[in-house]
Length: 270
Image 1 (spheres, helix red, strand yellow):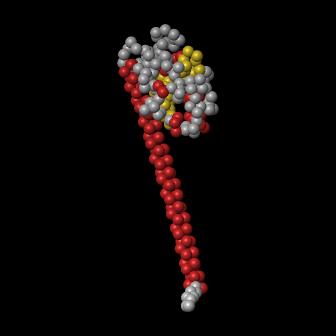
Image 2 (image 1 turned 180 degrees about the vertical axis):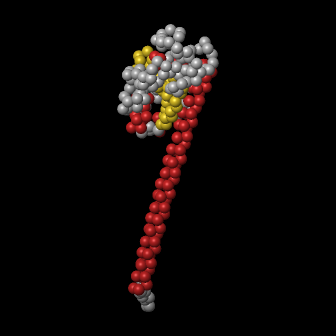
């Protein structure tokens, strides 16, 4: 009876094991390289997306602010042309009673008028909120206060600076006014025509792009978006500083307005 004897070649077995080990290392290295490249690609795409999103947000906020300024200026120009209508932004801010005051109102798309004395919040020169003028601040908890398909809130504030300089009786007198032996009246129909300046601020906010609580109509602090919108434009804590601290995407634009009576030229320019 014949028996077949098979012997394993020791050198051949060692060589095959070594090759298998090398292949495994190469495969593992390739997988690690692919994972690293993929992670870099994902991170880069995420960064690009954030940059693109930030650019889109800035454009959206800018367009909302620009549209608000254009709308309020157009509305005021049309209403000012009607001599029987005194409910205009320019007329309201030019009143001597508004010196040092700031007037805020929300851009509500469903309102018939952008500016109305029935829908404003007003602070006096001491930064105190007037109780009978407290219906203008935007409420992020109310869908009627949103513009741009319900994503964005726009609020406007107009500030009448305090005249701290005493330049005499005729400081704001316009050219063509008679000054001979003239005593400036405090009241009555002969008050000297004045040119007044006030500053407009418009702030647009996208609450959904932050983790800050939106708050509601009763929020007054600095921990909610609604509370930030109620902050003044003067002082240590303002609308902008409050929103920045909460990390809420916003943009503010500012414009200076000069109320110049028709047919006259302002001497002081202020």
